[in-house]
Structures are given as structure tokens and as C-alpha cells.
Image (cartoon, rainbow over all chains, first blue to last red):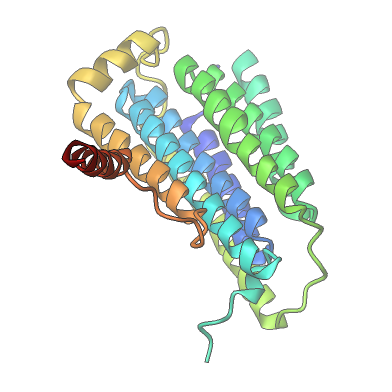
Length: 101
Length: 195
């Protein structure tokens, strides 16, 4: 007896909500980055659940693309964080306020 | 029955590790908790008959992305976050957003449970075999795969350019150096012949 599709969607929604609140509350750039990865994984779970429940392989292929995009974004994002750290010795995003005023 | 029990075990693990990722101020504890989230999600993919995606999830997320994140944390020697010093209403707004998202999740759960068709179409057949995913990737979905290749190339180039220091000299082509050396050698030979 399988859990219904709604259970997988609910788990995905809860993980996405936790990730979204984490992005807002965290001040560390690496911490925000990890919460973004959490949101992407929640969406991957939605795709795989729909792929299973409708018998279509398209969902799993899109999960593959999402993972590739996440890896590419992670490489460039960590490069930006390192470049940011070189200049000011801190990854606190509250310090990134040069454009203000 | 077994699938339901397994789903609840792994779902509980995933939610617990996700809360731990958001809660900890030390980024290293958050990174290790995130690895726990990835592993429990991979187990859920196995119960959803997607073995290829489960393996690729461990390979890419837990094996490459989190290793790089931990490299960066160790390289930059990041400390814990200091206590919060932002305006209070921003935290209230963030909490409100979280509550709104959870309410939407609950609404989706109730709405999808009321739809008539909610069981698996073919329970005995799995569409997630590596063979079928590979066949689809190179016949029907060839264009996205090629675009992802170009995207990864862009990421490599971007990564190299971002960490380049501006005081580095530009690379001189070996060909230009060789031409200069040959021109100097030719001038020396003419001088000796003239003598």
C-alpha cells in the first residue's frame, strides 16, 4: 500500500518552506547557499514523485537537468563567495552594502 | 505497507536534517546536516522506483557539491554566525513567509487528496531504469542535454575567471616568442656572413 501522491508533495512543500525561511534568516553566504540547495532538492522530489505516479520518464530527465544546473551554479557561486571574501575577510551578507545610498 | 513505513522514516529524517541545517550557526554543522538530507532523499527516490536518480543524487550532491562546500568552509576558516542584529520586523516578515508556504503545502495536500486519480499508473513497471533514461536522453531530449553541456562549459570558464588575480601577467603565446627568437638568430647569421 503506497503513500499517496499528496504525501510526497507535502514533504516537498515542507522542505521548500524550510529552505526558504533559511535563505531569509541566515547571514552567512555559505549558509544561504546550502538552503538554496535544499529548495532545489525539494523540487527534485516533486518531479520524481510525479514521474512515478504518471508513468512518464520526463520528470526524471528534468531532475537530471536540475542537478546539472545546480552543480554549475554552485561552482560559480562559490567562486563569487571566495572573491568576495578576498576583499573584505568576511562572508557576512550584511556587509555587502556598497551599493546602498 | 512497507513503502509507507519507509516513507515516513525517511521523510522524518529529511525534515529533521533540514531543520538542523537551518538552525545551526556553525556552517560546518549545517553542511553535514545537508548531507543527511541528501542521503534520506536518495532513499526516498529508491522507494519511488528511480534508481538512476538516487545514484546520481548521491554522486553529484553528496559527493561533489557538498565536498566543495566543505572545502570552501575550511579554506576560508569560517566561524559561527554572530548573534542577529537586524531589525525585528524583518524577522517577523521571514517567519510569515515560512508560515504562508506551509499553509500552501497543506492546501496542496488536501486538494490533491480530493482528486479522483491518485494511485500509481503502472505499479509493477519502473520508468527509471538507466537504459530508458539513457535512450530518452539521446533521442527525444537531445537538445536539453547539449544545452547542459554548454552550460557546464560556461560554469568552468566563469570559475576560472572569477578567481584570477588581476596582477597576474597575461600569457604570451609560445609562437610569438619563437618568432622573435628566430628573427634574432637570422640577424646574427647575416652579420657573420657579411664578415
